[in-house]
Image (tube, each protein chain N blue to C red):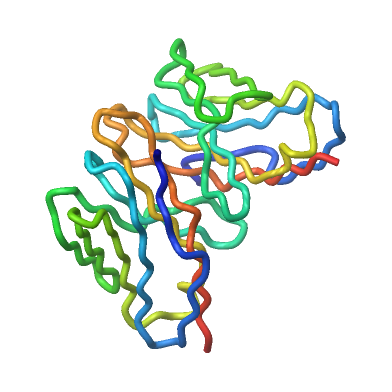
Length: 112
Length: 111
């Protein structure tokens, strides 16, 4: 079984809709991250969480919110989706030292 | 500013060596990474190197680090069609939580 899972894997939605992307991990890691990947731009950090009570904004947090429901779960929400949020979204985890990240398989989101 | 640069594309013939290059900006980076992304999949850590090392070899992979020029390279020996993927370079500046990723290099291996 995969250590970091993401649901859904693919989603098509319409402008203005609220959508939630979910991430679960079985690695027992404290740290979790949400990234966005756009072609030719690498990965950009949206939000990160060092534990259940510690959530921080990344480089591109506008238009996004997160919830750390438990050590193993970290959800990303788009309150009102817009077309330029069409991208590939990755969840990642790392241990307390943070020197190695483990990525989920990604969620491909299309906003029409 | 923070910017990790990579060329976007590389094409090699099966059996040849591939060299993927990366330049990074933060001289304090303690760890430098190479990730592989296959189609439809997440990023998989291939290897990493500590900043106090010049070279690291792991089977067909050789990582070279030139700290003076802030240049990192990944050499894949005897490249196979299964090596076709996007390869990301990343740095982790000392004392930070942040990983700074490059744009990725798409490697295409021709049979």
